[in-house]
Amino acid sequence: MKFLDEYRDGATAQKLVRAIEQITTRPWTIMEVCGGQTHTIVKYGIDEMLPKGIELVHGPGCPVCVTSLEMIDRAHAIASKPGVIFCSFGDMLRVPGSRGDLLQLKSQGCDIRILYSPLDAVSIAAANPDRQVVFFAIGFETTSPPNAMAVAMAARRGLTNFSVLVSHVLVPPAMTAILAAPDNRVQAFLGPGHVCTVVGNSEYPPIARQFRVPIVITGFEPVDMLEGLLMAIRQLEEGRAEVENAYGRAVREEGNPASRALIDEIFEVCDRKWRGVGTIPQSGLRLRPKYHAFDAERRFDVETIETQESTVCISGDILRGVRKPQDCPAFATACTPHAPLGATMVSSEGACAAYYAYGRHLQATPVAVHLGV
Amino acid sequence: MCLGIPGRVVETWRDHEILMGKVDFGGVLKRVCLEHVPQVQPGEYVLVHVGFALSQIDEAEAHKVFAFLEGMDQLDELAVNSAMGPDPDEGPAEGKAS
Image 1 (cartoon, rainbow over the protein chains, first blue to last red):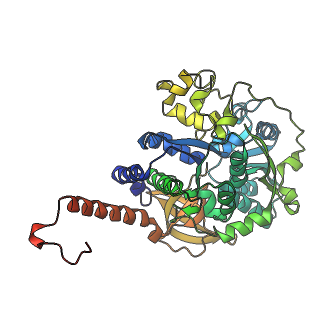
Image 2 (cartoon, rainbow over the protein chains, first blue to last red):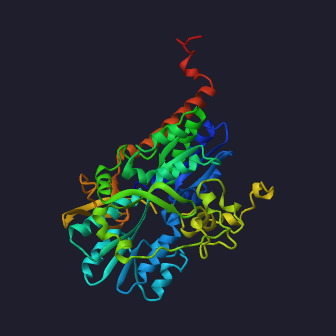
């Protein structure tokens, strides 16, 4: 496929690896923000192609992973109600809440539908006026325009049986939280390419300046990621800390103005709890008061749910790039994709699930763990 | 989750005043909301996430990394040639600062 195949070409990737080798003189620790990028790195073994000393740590950018346990439980409670058609992206259905997952509910006869697009939920609501249709609106900035469009379309069509359970998260506050932590190890970021197609790059220069970190907006294919790494390492070697765009074919400086305007019309910024991390101020989106009629939490009056996370799981440290999956005593033993204990194992884009899927748990134990470091 | 797939716009229409289109992903056709890429024409490529086009693919920008690598190849060739010394057919190098 055009714009995919050429970015997966092995010979091109090797040239970029050689260019990285030529400019690297010191060890550096670089975080890729997105779960999709983590998946590419582990799938293609990009981390193993790089010069020794270049360490890739995996960021918090998997929205399925960081959706709080409380929100999963709310989804479960709403989807259990009689007469509700509960619609969701497929990867949310296997995420365990404290009362089980949505897939189990579906097998018990609840009307839970896996959708490709939130806009399909609006069509389902229009076709079923006697049923309540709820869409589980999760995601980063990337997913906020389609979710906002679903609400706008429902409003325009006057639908009174459509609502959204909103659990949107924002990338820049999470990057700031990682960099501000005293044990931060991240020296440069591969920035979130698809987030930036929507909101642009303007939020990143203040972060680069404040924490002296290069941020290179990067795509998701192997050639994209190696180009992003080359640009990030060049900045580190030259002592620069700037925002650069390695994903120019998709990302404009200003993002997509129509999308930004729609997001601003439908949503407002709020504090948000991230699974494995805790509450990050101003890191989420919720519906503006004008659209509260479409808020599933208000419509169904779901009670506050207290939850308890695993005490063994170290996903919070993994999401901040402080530790790696193999550092966890439960990784691939008590915790697997079939029975996940925490955020980074619940979705295929989580670092632990990606390491598991590509057999990293079958490799020799890392030296650092042997030495008890 | 933030998956974005490039696809070629085949045709466009309006549905409840929203710009929609048929997009070809390597032979798989899908209905996609094009409301936020209103300038797009059939034959052009868009980046699609959950049935929604986030941006139009900039073909000129798409070529940049390959142009950069081509330039790197040419530099490598120059380096190899200069390591072999001046081409005897060209005679002694002239006009160089020494």
